[in-house]
Length: 207
Length: 207
DNA sequence: AGGAAAAATAACCCTATGGTAAGAACGCTA
DNA sequence: TAGCGTTCTTACCATAGGGTTATTTTTCCT
Image (cartoon, rainbow over all chains, first blue to last red):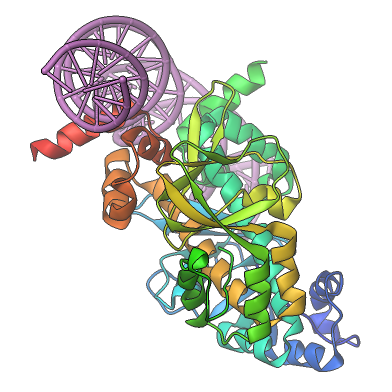
């Protein structure tokens, strides 16, 4: 959902930033200066399974571009039940965008489901990029348009599909996420319990 | 979710375009040329209750800014059940953004719930505005950011709240929409049947 | 390989919501 | 103000999915 990049000659430690560069260059031409800036504000991190990058209730200062592994964002309700808003794998962005765009404290938790690699950005520094390098405006607008479409679709699916249908669709669309994440996380994304998902899987296997 | 405006001296027939202008000027400075362009591509329309502005299955060429009344967008499933994605009142945009951004045929229907007034824009002409007047990029990016936040929140609400809780929230947040729309449309927005909503209302009244 | 921890399944009963159908209330319009 | 269509409510039973707890299977660790 966000953006970015670095110079052509990368130190070995930031090799995976190349993903990000090519990702961006597919969409807009990047000046060397813009690459420099991106490089200067990014920090590559390796994180372990279970690590929490954003804590509910705290200020959100970072946003993450995933280069390896799988993360998720979720909220926790009054009964300590978790509800997954988003999964993120390679080339996806993840953070608490509600908090960032509303300038509020985090309502979400962002945690790593597997050992992962991410590129970390400071939200404020990242936001600077638009004034310094206006070519990012259009790039990001289009990203957001695509994101809006996927959210519209998710809402419609939630309204009109049964739980088994939603599960089938999830498997179909996110096979590369399914392999990383336990079923109870998928259930919390689909809006059902782990037990219901188990039942659904059993029914599905019978056919 | 989109953008717009017109010149300072308006013909009387486009007086309501002023809403749009002030809406935009609150956010970005508008050149006269940009105002001219907006004026040239906009068309004010009065529509009756029940009129359909976008038909499922057809090409989506228009997007609408509402200046009076209330409209909704919905999809229709295999059993002819309708599921409301969005309501739009004064100062909101409405169209089938899934179709527009994906360049597909309409999956949604946009219909007017009341007698309404809208300003109609051709999607292609509207899209031109970004290349001709780059100041709109940032404006629209921020609109989309806000829209993403509201969609994230809706998804989380759908996952974690009960039907009565969602209804309470709807009443609280959209009192100005509730007055226009029949309960079965609200039900289809909340993801429940008209009958369930009726039950919920009865329970609520008892307290 | 062996044991602990995590994840998935199963079985129980319970509750919220759905489907159908009927009737009541409301609101136009003649 | 009568009458008709629309919207809302009620009541019935049906069902999907939830809550709890136990058991099995898988994964992970050393």
